[in-house]
Length: 64
Ligand code: SF4
Image (cartoon, rainbow, N blue to C red):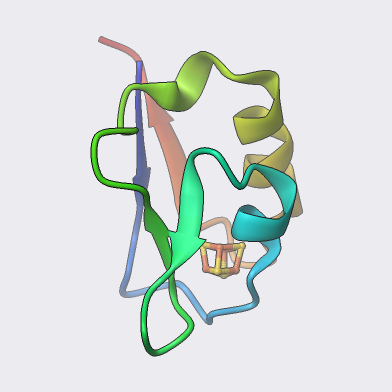
């Protein structure tokens, strides 16, 4: 499973980085991003919580 952020939808609320900081961080402009090399982190329960926490549903988990 891979986790991705739709940067066109992200509003930079920061919830993802707060909820699952091992997988998400914020870029220099405050927008959410998946930490380099952590695209495979979708199995982390906190990532699923971050999906729910994102106010604009910008985080997607893709099944392999
Ligand atoms: S929670 Fe959603 S809107 Fe907020 S920074 Fe993360 S991806 Fe962007």
